[in-house]
Image (cartoon, rainbow over all chains, first blue to last red; front, side):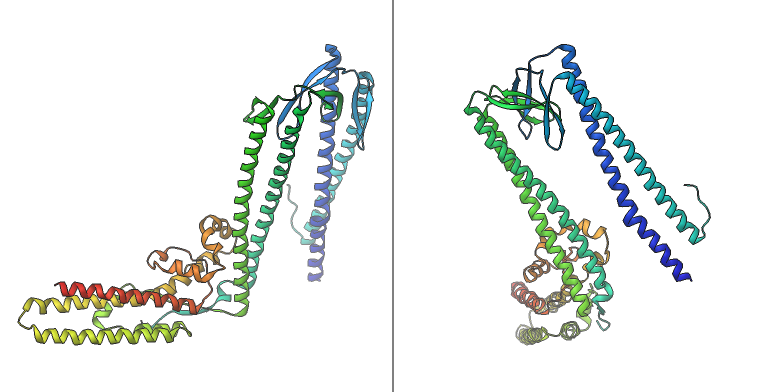
Length: 145
Length: 332
């Protein structure tokens, strides 16, 4: 009977270590990626709003060629902007179109973040539950963590 | 010199599993280094492609490109001033350079990367040697190799005075100690005893001839004794050497876990890398017996033949010390 219990505890621990914890790490990494996307688009929105406010039509900037070597670049017409819409496609937008697209995109990204957050919470809850199960099997007293 | 050394199977000092564990840990470190190496190689490739680009750009006055605007957007635009580059010097400082100057900077960067790669490769070689050493230890431990250890007795000289010439001592110890090289050693002991006899005869003859020179006679035994004692010391040193060669690795390797291979690489880089070519290494470590007391030889392998060779060296050294003392004697 004792060995059966030991077996069960080991199975539970393996489930936590091999399944739940990697899942948790994966979910958190995914959410971080979405956070990054969100930041990129909010930066872009702020930049376009800046251009609009200052009514900039031509732009001179420095382009990174790699290895932190920069060269001057000239943009004669900033009213048309190519925005990444995913899967490597870029769509030519005017400023207002771009802002509309970015708003839609941001909404979607924040929804994704919420999804991942709840997924992470549920994985954490599962881990906690399995740990509680192990505790019961070992008949240890309840400890507040 | 009667209770002389202990015999312990290597497997009791470093069990095979432990040695394998150590080897695995070193392998992990090697994998880590390999990743670093790949990263550096990536940097080098990037650097080369940037050099090519910088060399090509000034060929035309402008290039039509898509100018990145943030990470997710582009503007159609063009590169202008194609012979002016802003190059990062480090710490946030940039310098405006021409294409040629930029290429020079990038080439210097490439060289620095190359040296980093070289040093990383050297480190990896050392680690590989270490790993193979651990593997060898595991193998030996599994094969049931035996370690023989003896304590080096410092007051060998005083004993020589009381017990006469310690001729049987080395042979005795060596017989216990080793199986293969005792033959050569006995030969040397024979030579030594012969020399000693000759010396005694000489002494006697001198006593007979120059009995009127009191000073001489009084001096003689003293110098002789001192000479004996030097023999004894030198002759017993092989025992010490054998001991030294084996003793230090017991603490070092039996540490077993983390600390072991952290303090290896800097300390033992040279010795470890040579651990494979044991003959050379052993000789090097054993040559100065007094200092090697403190040094870690990094080898457990008992290459009896090799030690025998070393003793040969040691004893020829002892012989060479003889003429000096005799010369001293005659000078008196």
